[in-house]
Image 1 (cartoon, rainbow, N blue to C red):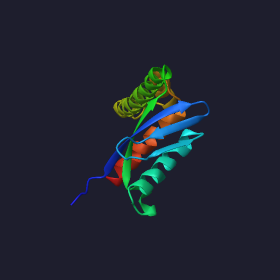
Image 2 (cartoon, one colour; image 1 turned 135 degrees about the vertical axis):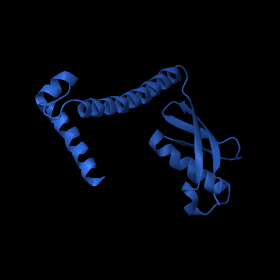
Image 3 (cartoon, rainbow, N blue to C red; image 1 turned 120 degrees about the vertical axis):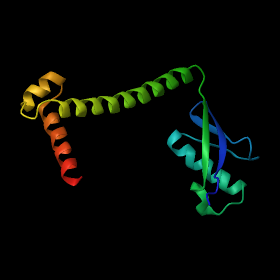
Image 4 (cartoon, helix red, strand yellow; image 1 turned 30 degrees about the vertical axis):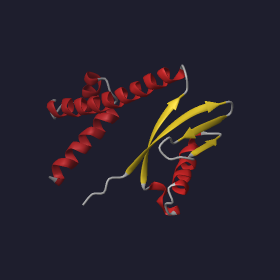
Length: 138
């Protein structure tokens, strides 16, 4: 049986040199820190205290964090989306490279394959080695 974890919405704003966090659904949960890296722990500690959980329960719930950073929010979201797109493209590229190397004749030189695909000969050797190892363990 899987138990559903509680999720708390956290509204984060920036004022002068501090990050402020508010958890609207838990009265009294407001905290601040100088850096975002410290904020999540401070929010978790405040939730634990205000909901009468044991100290060890810091990781027993999820946070749904929403940042209100004014005009910069749009640029941050665009940058995050670009990173996610780049990660997906990198995975697709790696798969295409493996497929291309697998489809080329095994007698073709590593350097020729590298020039055809546009990668280093070292990467071709690495992919060939991974492919050979997979075949041996299958």
